[in-house]
Amino acid sequence: MSRLVEKRTVDMEVIGKWVEPQSRVLDLGCGRGELMAYLVQAKQVYATGVDLDFARISACVARGLSAYQGDMTDFMRAFPDRHFDRVICSRTVHELNDPAGVILEALRVGTAVTVGFVNHGFWKNRVDELFRGRKVRNAVYTTAWHESRPANPLSVADFEDFCRLKSIRVARRAHLLGDWRTPCGVMPNLFAGYALYDLARA
Amino acid sequence: MSDDAPPPNAPAQGPRHLAEDDVGIVRPRDYTHAEPFVFKSGQTIQGFTLRYETYGTLNATRDNAVLVCHALSGDHHCAGWHSPSDTKPGWWNNLIGPGKAVDTRRFFVVCANVLGGCQGSTGPSSVDPSTGRPYGTRFPFVTIRDMVHAQKLLLDHLGIAELHAVLGGSMGGMTAMIFAIEYPQFTRRQIIMASTANESAQAIAFNEVGRQAIMQDPAWNNGDYPRDGGPRVGLAIARMMAHITYLSDAGMDRKFGRRKRESAGGESYTFDAQFEVESYLRHQGQSFINRFDANSYLYITRAIDQFDPARASGTLEQAFAPVQAESLVVGFTSDWLFPPEQNRSIALALLRAGKRASYAELSTDLGHDSFLLESADLYALVRGFLERSETYVFDFAI
Image 1 (cartoon, each protein chain N blue to C red):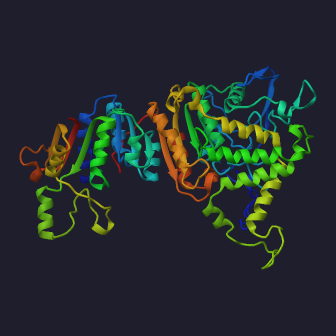
Image 2: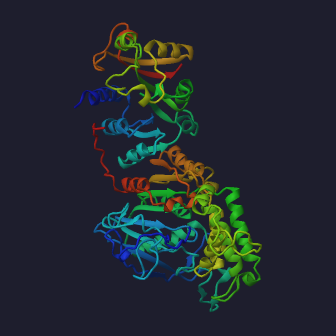
Image 3: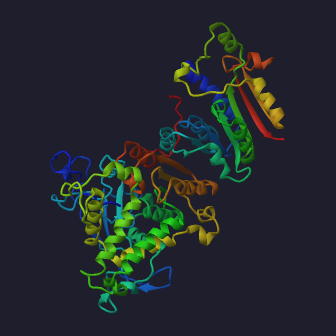
């Protein structure tokens, strides 16, 4: 397995631990359905994904997964409160037009909301920017700025502030070091490469 | 659906019915149900006939059947050729055949002309055995449900244990939905394309104008006309107008623009067809009257207008409650007759009802007829849905 693939796996494993077996899961920005396929296999969940791209939806369908092509907020608005046991927003949150709107809507349709993101405050990212003076590139975000989608990077501290501001209860946190494997005990905003949050309504 | 002549610039080919991925020469068959059939309206006929075609082979477990459902003006001939001299194949030949998206090496494909139709199945133009004359408007009112019940009798007759899938576009999608609702154990998968769970006022309005064109033609004579006669002018106008609703503004511009017929001069002060789009529509109208019965047009458009599974159940998700099929709904961006939003509603209602359902959308400029599109993306989507394995194999490869 390449390092990149390994990093994806770690992310999935943490989320997999939080997901209840046979629960109803919504994956926002589901891509080609890697996470959903894993959760269906490991936790026998009933999974639905949303993505904007036809080819990704088609790939999900070919895997036997339910996937919906369209805007994630519009999609969630079509569902009653707590329709899903868990809404997952994995490595998508930095690309959203209205991150607060999406997370709050996810908290309405989901009993729990899992958000996973690359910590922009990670020391290597800071050093990178300070010394190289360039857009951060790493094992996951490999492309130069002109080949990248618009991004709105966030840090652990940013996200903690957001949860406080919106009175969102953080049920669980997982801060992982730069290897995305080893738990990060202290100063996660500086030392965590990747962060996962399990949210609930206050 | 359009019945276009083959494109004039098509490359000269060998006999197309012999192509490797073509089902080849096919023969329609008739199934006759010799017992009384009760319609939803309560009216009864003393038996009926459905004309149908099949491609591929039913397997030993009798569970590899794929039922293809046609739209308003379609028929049972969805793939292959009736004779080597045919100018065009069945209407969904691009999708169905050996190695194609609906692979006839793997699936036993069945397609039947609907009850109420006029392509060999019993409908208003059939002879009423009790009078010896065509039923005309004495034919019972047909609903999509009636069409489905009749097709289920055919599938039982063919010995099909369960449907691997039912698929259709437009009215064919409505037919698929009713199959999944009425026969949940029997219907494993459904593909609904360019369809709706209930027509908009605009779509009903277009159908009404078509019906009025027919009924205001004196030759309609309250539906009582000889087989080779009838409201040909009214039917042609109905078809011309309906055909516009199957296309899109951009698509028509691309296909015709403001191009004029060669015979039309620069300045022509007549009402003869000058623009290519005019002669195209006239051709559509004329070819339609030679193959379609005006009363069938009234009955089937009425069935489409009435279609509203949510009405009886309260909400669409309640209507979908019995469904066990996995569903794939496909919308097309330029379809303004049954627009993407209406297709999305079907998928969303299925998901709210706790069913497994997907929605995919293709960007096209072909309007409502887009489901007949030659598109590698559409083929891959349909094939992926029909052929994927039941077990999830998790693959970390990206």
